[in-house]
Image (cartoon, rainbow over all chains, first blue to last red; front, side, top):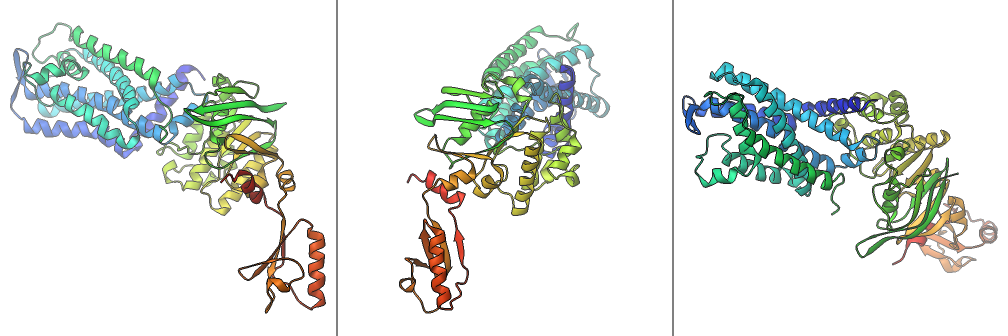
Length: 257
Length: 296
């Protein structure tokens, strides 16, 4: 079988596993949709300051939530499901077959990207139809941003497994790192750019992913092409760092007690 | 030709010397039992041969290849059934077997392997709905789907009920008739006795005995035991041969069972006594194993 064929088969198996597992389907998929309804209802009619403009809250929130969905499907999902599979010996067993490691990783990443794309389409569609959000100005830029963000956060999810000692500790560690950064990065409501929290958030990729999504949706017509190179560069730097660390330190076997 | 050759194998974890100069070889087509108590080093040896661990010293070849650098070429020819390997919970038996099937250059048909491990009726059941024993059999199927020349079975029947164990034994027997080389670890001596052509006993990181199950039993200086229910109104002192009384039973230990038995039965027949529950037991493989591995 060709290399592409092997990778595509892995994607297929990962997809089957994902949708049949109520925990992953709920947390990675239904969660962002529930957030969408809750926050859009809470902040109905309010406006959000973004840089030097003010937009309808939903116009701010929908691109931020697209980014949130991608991060959940890639970072959280991969960090948790791979540490679970490592603990139960599934990864060790895979390692004993002729399946090349890259093909396994391609399957995991490809499946997460598919979930991300579906989530992005649903969130955006829901926003447009139900909450009167503007149609994204730069569709191409939005797609590129989702692809870059997806890959970066997949790499971060794989790197994250290195610091997870065992599967029981997974949710606490992953959410303990992820959720605070998500909040200070202004995922659910804008954080004043002059605040100390916002300054901290600048160092992490989450803030830049949200910024990049917002500028691709561009409801206030601030950009000519929907890209802010700086955001993508900082995300990419995190991604490269994560790949370097994961490729050296990723463990296929449970840690011996 | 030997499927596996190990010479002077060494491995330490920090200050702990887990494997201290182990040598053995496994011939093509034989079932080789690797026995030893927990912590004896057998899992380390197996994992070095499977390619999961590096070694500190000595040489090892598996199908003529160094397992540490064997990589994909070697993994295509070796089937693994690990001690504790789970399978993805949400895929069905057939889906999993098909998935693994795609990893190998010349696999067996999925249905044939599912039949071989006796899961045909569960072929469309998801792995999480299988019983522990059935999951283990699925595990075995995944180890065999690539039509390997060499199969590692690490405690394949632990946790099985007796009928499931018998079924698993038949699977291993079938593999042997197919000409596969099998390396088996187990804690069950009856399993080793039934399945293994040769046995290697490891204790404290070293080989303490090697041979066929029969030669190990013959090689011991342990006594044969003769037991029978103590006749009514008698005690050990009234018997013609030195015996111990144990829970209403008389137990005689002897190195000359034919002669001893003759004396005993002659004595009993002369008195018109029927020795109920009479049995003669050679040291079992388990007795020999316990003697070999008892260091306390």
